[in-house]
Length: 220
Image (tube, rainbow, N blue to C red; front, side):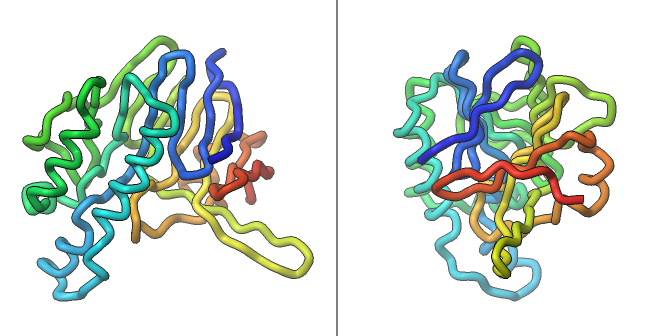
């Protein structure tokens, strides 16, 4: 999977085509908004059904990213679970899968608005994580610098030769990067909508996910 290199606060980061962020200097892999258990929560609260394979699909793609870059640190940037009960409802196989991925590395669960408290799945639970000049948190803060966040599930539309495609995307400016949602069935917010259009600087870039990550000026 190819990646787009960029810099924030003097640090070289990589926006990977799968939707994960990699910091080579620290061997740190970051993903946001896994929303594990979304289909279970939908069925429980709304009676609506989604194909019941989203958790396995999300874990499989995360496992592939771990194999690709072999990080020492993994940061899950909030909303890792669709709610607290969804975390408890994971199957034994899924819990063992997560435990296996955690083995031999530091694993940090950042609190999100869907999962504000710790879950009993190993790792460390923090409201935010400062490392060097960067701070990892779930929701972007106005005026922040060196910030890595998620929450908004940004997506962008690219039109060329009469064809239009919409993909999840990273949003990057001089002060921050907002990650796309990594989870299956997570939807998204177009980057020309507020608050994304007001959070990001005028020079912001959108990096569309996919086999060949495509940086474009952030649509306004």
